[in-house]
Length: 286
Image (cartoon, rainbow, N blue to C red; front, side, top):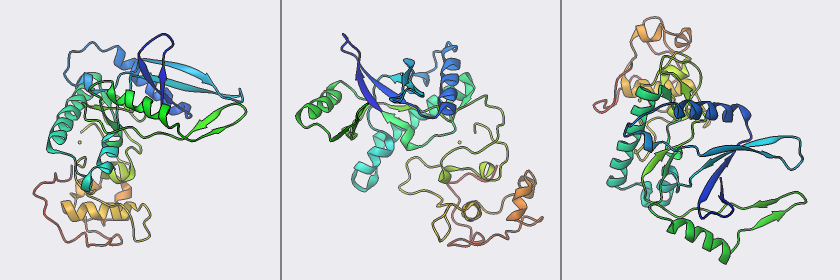
């Protein structure tokens, strides 16, 4: 992410430069679709708008990169939690973020008919209440420039961290979004956030645990610290109880881990999936 100043203008912009054409194609498709929607929905301003897109030639001239232009925002919710004592955000920030994210999801699902599919703290950016943060950011560069590597065709700079901001949370990054809220299929979300439908390659839709817990509900890792779908599902069963047989029948892959009566037969993780934990605050299997 780079900050750029338009020539002859006092407006500062943020550039996101893509290397993968497939991802940017999806982003542009989604934004083009969103521009066709006339809405007064309260959640629409909670989605980061795209200002413009242009192509930049690579230094060797053999390829080009898509550059998306946005108004700048502050650090992500994920970055904020890593900077705070114990990694815990204030109750005010929690309430504001939940309100904004639920509002923007309602707009995306009900009016835009778009599923974000990558809802996580790193994709929620905090706004800046005024220009002072960007001014301090630029002043810091004037006073102590970041290290750089100068090559024949370009200069590579070390990234400078943004200061903490406390503005309005905004949902960003539509690189994994899907058009249409009807049932879809395929891998989505970072590993530990994946629903059982995704792991078992079932079809899924826009219906929504874990933005503000101090730890993840599930580890999804085996003793070798490798991503393990069996251990992930075992953890889910430990929290939710055994899934209904009719749920398992939706995928042949289910019977690698359960028998035809719904009894677990997979390798056990650190705790037994037959020992059901307190589920009073957790939704049950679909």
